[in-house]
Length: 318
Length: 269
Ligand SMILES: Cc1cc2nc3c(=O)[nH]c(=O)nc-3n(C[C@H](O)[C@H](O)[C@H](O)COP(=O)(O)OP(=O)(O)OC[C@H]3O[C@@H](n4cnc5c(N)ncnc54)[C@H](O)[C@@H]3O)c2cc1C
Ligand SMILES: Nc1ncnc2c1ncn2[C@@H]1O[C@H](COP(=O)(O)O)[C@@H](O)[C@H]1O
Image (spheres, each protein chain N blue to C red):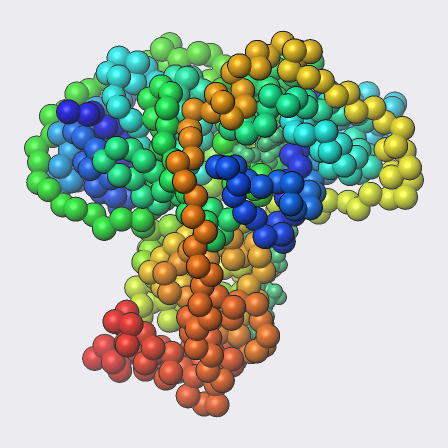
């Protein structure tokens, strides 16, 4: 049986939601092993018992997050060389793609990024040119390394009791050049308890039309259990952190429902959201380009429409 | 400091893109300088200006900015734009065997030139607007054994001590990183506002040198690049039907209600 490795992301003692998605894809193609870089495995491993994972390889001894992707890539490449799996799946985050890129170079392997589906024979589906074209591709060399966008698959749960293999590393195991790019400090963006943008199934985004007042956007997001996104105009103005920007130079999202409020729909914004399943736009300009892709477009003032919608949803939920 | 800026010529992002034979059909669309690479060019020029005794880039600054690109011969148009902004010279690697190269091959070719010319600092954009992979900078760092500082929203170099500091924009916030040169840095679009080429700059760029090199001239085996040796293969590509236009409601006092009804109907609440 094929052996598929997944890179299991975690932060602050919690496994990422996308790990279940990666495991779901991996299980289609073979037996699943999760690589966990750093963290406390006694806290993390119980969170990996619901996805049919048969083995966990826990790499410890170095603070992976303190360095750029090079350190993680070297550690992973070493494991791939030893265990020769049939593929490595990684979530398509900025860091995940960098790790994938460096592992591909280091292990002489082919790489596919931003796949939205993967079949049992490791044929990947990508949606390119802003969703207008669907491509199927496969890797023909080395250990196929495939990054998958989160939110692309319904997690299939399957209880399992994975065995845990610990691999303890030391700084001296790494090339000195890799330890040279160090994080000296981090300013975490305030989260406000809302779901992560790339993991949310509903996103409410605000643009220049909010004029800096995101409260109606946030109120709607909260009643829907949604994440809050922003256009570049809104992040440039400092109304919302850059980590919430949706678009070409922000995040690419594909939620079940995307609600654009006071956003004109510039091509760079569309590049990050046009593969959303259902799109709703609220804009006071009837000719705003965002209406071209909206399943429902409301021509109106967001300061009137959003509060009314929020109240109405509250009523329907009660 | 010897600075390299990697730029790519890409189809205009406004143009409609189509596939042909498993590859992007580049012949049919206008080509421009990848707009995200303009920020890298601008940042290189600002760095030099900051550390130049005359306050200007170019001769007398004590630093150089070289544009590097891999692409077809007509990529010289995009390179010219970067030169007219103020970069000193350029190297274009152009070879028929490169057609259909993937990111692995692109990074191999770029790394070969960077290694040969011994650049201290390599600046990139965060992604090419056609490939949208965002992997070339990390691949370069891996191949060159340079420090990797990607998604920089701020950048500072101390040429005397060869140290570099960046503020990286990550999924969770701002990460401040430090490293010693040489380094590969990719910059986000918030880092600066790229200048428009001045008339003087445009005229001066016409005299600047673009060295066009083939694979054999840089010592890369043609058999390891190009579509024939790409390690990922496109099986098929299908154009999807355009998104059908939806319903449009004009808010006359009931827009919010119509919205809530729509969500209920779609079973989203
Ligand atoms: C290299 C590059 C990269 C970029 N990357 C991104 C990116 O990643 N993401 C991104 O979003 N943009 C990006 N942009 C910017 C993009 O081109 C647009 O400028 C930006 O998306 C505009 O944001 P906006 O829609 O909020 O503002 P605007 O275009 O100004 O639109 C505001 C809209 O709000 C409407 N409005 C105003 N008041 C109200 C009201 N009270 N109620 C309802 N509607 C109202 C207006 O009718 C208008 O349509 C990039 C640009 C460049 C050059
Ligand atoms: N063919 C190329 N020539 C020069 N630089 C490139 C090329 N392709 C990519 N790059 C650089 O790598 C960055 C990321 O590109 P990509 O990984 O293709 O999304 C770009 O912004 C460029 O700076």
